[in-house]
Amino acid sequence: MELLVGQEDINPDMLDNSGRTLLSWAAQEGDDGAVKLLLEREGVNPNLSDKRGQTPLSLAASNWRGQAENVVKLLLGWEEVNP
Image (cartoon, rainbow, N blue to C red):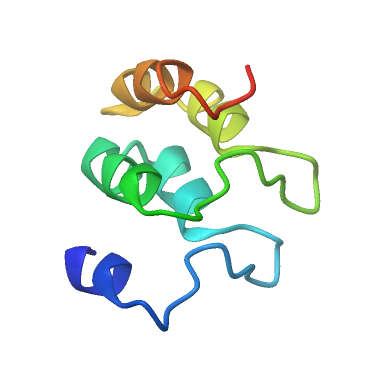
């Protein structure tokens, strides 16, 4: 993930077929390390919603497996995230 996020020619806000970004997937999976890396990258929008209207925060909040609680706390503590 660090290599991918570090590539300037890679758009981390690129949407997949479901309208999700890398941040959305990392948040849903409870990967707090990947979420932190993505939030620290300049230009990442933490409020993009997918085709179903779900944001990274709502995806993390709806999935309490593993590290999801840490991801919710991380996102809520990030200034740019809309609660």
